[in-house]
Length: 124
Image 1 (cartoon, rainbow, N blue to C red):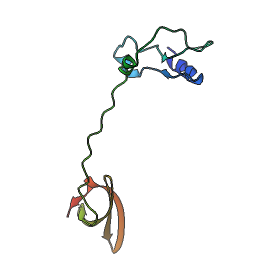
Image 2: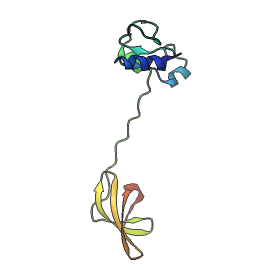
Image 3: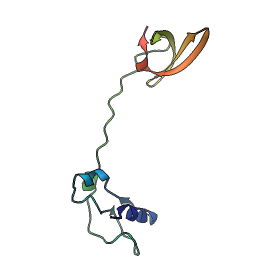
């Protein structure tokens, strides 16, 4: 059960090594624990025992969870110069960058500039 040491040893020799993540071991996957997937085996490897055979990249990819796709972003509903409210405080949008709005408010006689996510604002 030295798969992480074997993977480190392979990588030190310049060989790509893939170790199945821990969640596959919890599902009792038959090829999960104790295996390291690589293209080659160094001659005098301490932690790599032997070569079993080829594995298709598609089969190896099934061991890893798919990344969740980010939902399509809603366009920023505000425009430069628009009057908005942050809570009960009136503000004015100065600039927009992606989902962030730079707003300017006047509190206690001072102009304050803040970068806020557009979801923290409401139209005014």
